Length: 135
Image (cartoon, rainbow, N blue to C red):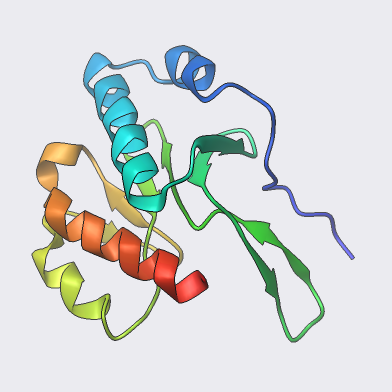
């Protein structure tokens, strides 16, 4: 069975942001997301793989037998936009998308250009609902 690429590492989150993120606004948004997600989750940020900042973790196992660990919530400050790993397809979360603001939905994440494009109160509700779902 293939080894998971996205595992928790010992890389410093601050060092990653300062060396990887080029634009000052994206750096500021990254540090703000760290503060918010730490407060909402109760977990310190950890690097997962080379570019994902995660908070807490849960264990998963698929019917195929594949299993591993993943962050409860997290984000990655990608070059073009943020990838937010904060959404679980629960009945509580689905209507929150209507109030989130300007975003694109991917298969496993929500893409946003900057924090000012989205409703932070709605993001908090989404994060907390997702944490509760995985716990």
